Amino acid sequence: MGITIKDIAKAANVSINTVSRALNNKGDVNKETQGRIERIAREMNYVPNQLARSLHQKQTGTIGVVVTDNSNPFYARMIKGIEDFACSCGYSIILCNSDEDAGKEAAAMRILKEKQVDGILITPTHTGDEFVRALCGYHKPFVLMNRSTDEADVDYVKTDNVLGARTAVRRLIQLGRRRLWYLGGPQRISSAVERLKGCEEAVREADLPPQTLRVIETSLHMEDGYACTAATMKENGTPDGLFAYSDILAIGAMKALRENGLRIPADVAVIGYDDIEISQYLEISLTTVRQQRYELGRKSAEVLIDKLRDKEHHRTAHIVYTPELVIRDSA
Image 1 (spheres, rainbow, N blue to C red):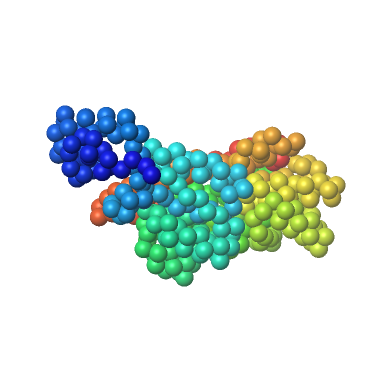
Image 2: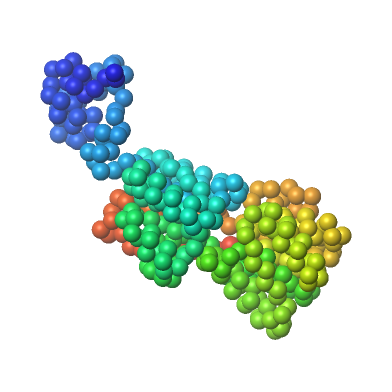
């Protein structure tokens, strides 16, 4: 059995309450007594019972993090930003993966509630009214990451997806490409809707007909980018410019294009989104829209922890970062 504050109290010849207040830095214990208690605690190798402390304070010092695919390098960097900031503020994180599945997401939320996390950071699988109501029903402070909603005034941190997509498609048009494909994510998520809007704006601004842009909705894994591109080419010919919702999708699409004898960028210019590390090391380095992935995570954690520390005066945060087009070999 481990050392308890009762053992320290006996060794220091003080009450249990005095030990508790000293070790929790309540500030109302005589300095000499506090020093003696802390010394005895160190000598006895006392380890605080965090569970008991959490129950007493009604806080666990933990933050739940729910992302849609933790195998995607995009999220790895974002999670690093979350963890670095959370740890600097005395919080630890519990990471869950939804795999873009609403059922898995709901299960993750239930687990985090059972773990009594203090708050939740989430990249949601969908952002409609039903989801927002469900999220609010958990009665935990939360912040949306990289996606947002117009259904309620909630905190979110994201990139300007409309601007990012518009910049990418504008680049393809400037290169003289007129058979454009947008390999996009499902329209149930805000970022996919916003990036489609940016694509369409770029086509309109160039006074090109709407049919210049073919919209292809797909799931968000690399194999989806490959399979969807290959299947669409069999039925609808080939593009001369392709913009993908993510670098992961773009990399899958590039494999399908090359297997069909197409040269990149001579036959098809390709642009991705996110600027994950591998993009610059591909045989044909990927032109992409850079997101500040680490900063997205760090700022999301900052917004949530500010909210946890001062719920009464917290103002809803809508933070939107500006993306940057990184031009490489593919377009």
